[in-house]
Image (cartoon, rainbow, N blue to C red):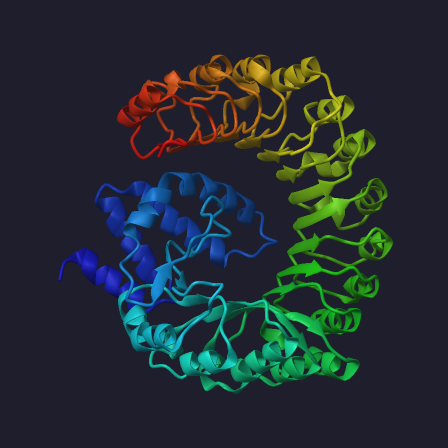
Length: 538
């Protein structure tokens, strides 16, 4: 057995330990694959790092750069799977959402067509080959689409299931009673006791919630709860579940107010809870955040109602919160949150919504501007005054700026060009201006801006660029450190500058899809940068 084969066997044999993975990373570096080695080390460190640690942002940004370089390598390195299993068709652009964990394949799919669901034969394939999957690959998480309680019971009794880390079930049942039966199977199966992760995307009633509460999860750390429509007694039982204090990551979808409120009440004092993702159109659940959450480092709030209780959230005690995401923010919501005691300690702010110029100006003038590392202000309403505030230089430590927008803004092209040419971000690594009408003049202004000398990832999708502006970006002396360039949805015909290998020497991924690039130009790009440039003709 070769050294590499022995190291990979150790990775498979000890899937929850980092040491074999790090030893394999050392082997890769010694054998002329330093980028792949760095990717594995980054992913191991990222998983071990808490959201409240400042290093989490560094690892996230580094991971996105390495992901661009290793994306194709990961897919090529994925092992063949036994019959019944398929590689997960997911977007690998964001390593947080990838189906590769700690540098290796982690999630796999079933192979039946979602609209039809499993048959006795396809379930049998999974059961017959699960042991081989565990013995020959690092895959430990199984994505199940349409599956009923009978099929799930059969699968959870199959040899090898004890080697799984967990499962996800994404069903749209005709009746929530089927969701109740699924939860009953999960709760009664001894094989789920060792699961560390569950994703339960379906509806359930009080019966299912009671089953979930009574389950014997000994190692569960991450749980996407089902959509719960239950009575107070069942909700109270869930809030007292013996496994609840072990959780580190939870996602709570739209459920009735009773279920969400009681669940958050039970989670408030969980000592290791690091991240919460919440969707609720009720007021009461948000008041629970004043109860504690001592370890919470990441909070995401999705689709809040128009009467969102911002004041209650602003009064919450979040001693370790470093990352906050919220969409559909109103002007008043943002103003209230900006004054919250915990807001000034954020390192990542993802604020999509109806923000106006005055909101962005207030953010730029706040103490947070000097310490914020990652800022996303997608689909906000601000215009000339807002972009001027963003580019004014007060965000002196910003390393990621995402202004991706699908909206047409009330701002003159000349003001966008001025913004592109004068924005000051000496530490910026990642910039997304997708949806802004930069045009060729804006691209030229970006290319001439020396403050972007540290940029490694640039996205200018749907920015009304032609080859003139695009070639200016590629040839810019300030952008030669780019690892990833996304220019989808523009008006490029040749993108000839990318065929010059002396330009952008570090480029590992360039997405030019949805551009009318002529076939001879595609051939030239493929010849010059095979595996790097993606076009619509591929």
